[in-house]
Length: 81
Image (tube, rainbow, N blue to C red; front, side):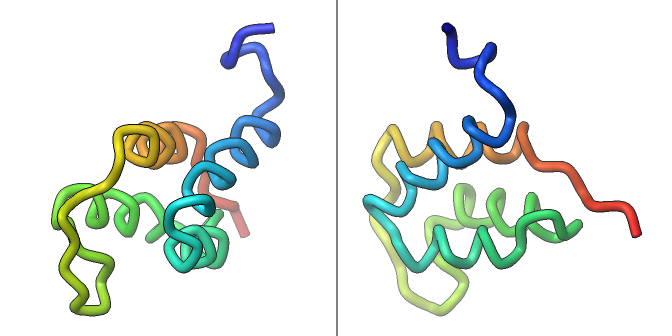
């Protein structure tokens, strides 16, 4: 089964596991924002700014983390109230 054939929730869990392995605090923040309209903005800001939003500078993300963040942007859906 290819990645795109996996159920959406399985793909989300896989991407979060990749991020958790390298950046546990960021993964927890994404889980907190997940389903909220600001989640994608938060992820994009992480990728583009090179920072984590708390003033801690970073050299950058590993390639697999950037891929997981990008995939999560594609998989994100805003919950309708």
